[in-house]
Length: 118
Image 1 (cartoon, rainbow, N blue to C red):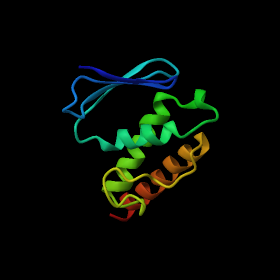
Image 2: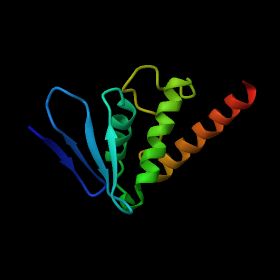
Image 3: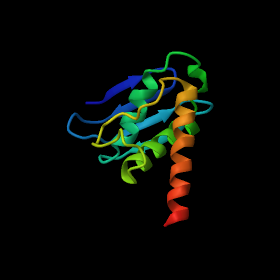
Image 4: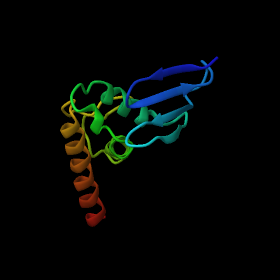
C-alpha cells in the first residue's frame, strides 16, 4: 500500500505502513527528490513545521526546506537548540518563512562558533 500526502510545496510517498522510509518530492522552484530514511526524524519535523506556515508558501523552496532539516539536525545533535531535547521535538521559531530563515541562520552561527572553539 502506498500512502501519499501532497500539497503545493511537497509530495510525500511511503510504500508500506511498517516503515518510515519515504520518497519526498520538494516541488519549488523545480522538483527535487529526497529519499528520507528510517532515522531521519529531522525531515519529518521540518515538514510538519512547514505545514504550519500559511503566508508566502511559494517561498518554501527545496533549498530552504533542506536547510531547515539540516538546522534541526545540527540543533539536536550538537545541542545548539535547547528546545530540541528529544527526537521529534519542534524548534521554537515563528511559523513563517522569515522564522525558518532566522532559525537556519541562528543554527549556522552557533555551529560556526562551535567549530571555531573546538
